Amino acid sequence: MDKNSNLKNIIIKTLDLNKAYDIISIDLKDKSSIADYMIIASGNSSRHIQSLSQQVLEKFKDNGLRDSRIEGKESNEWKLVDGIDLIVHIFHPEKRKFYELEKIWSELIPREKLII
Image (tube, rainbow, N blue to C red; front, side, top):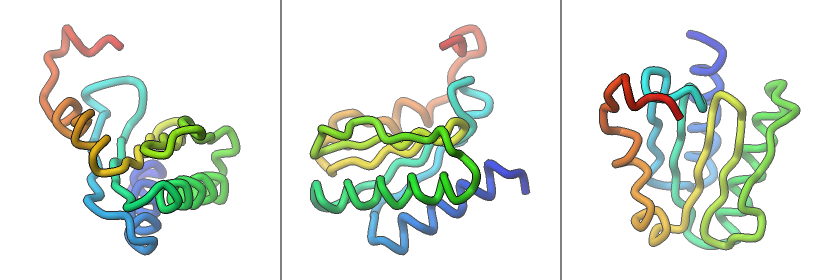
């Protein structure tokens, strides 16, 4: 198992242990150069979303990703934790439904449209 795949599993376990729900992982390796994996999860309140994002950030830092950061710090409905090759989105359920990232990134993208 490669390092990014192992870290993905650590993040999913962390989210699950801390009561995130509807956790999914999307393999981006053949879809985009922005990251190898995207994890999407939901939290049940703004405090829960903030706590989950902080815990994910700590796991990234514990695993040597010192340049990791949280985007959307001012938002109560969404956080993105940038782990370089692993991106974690944590949403309030209504925002998650609105953006439908699972649908966008789960579809196969033709090679000629892969340049992002």
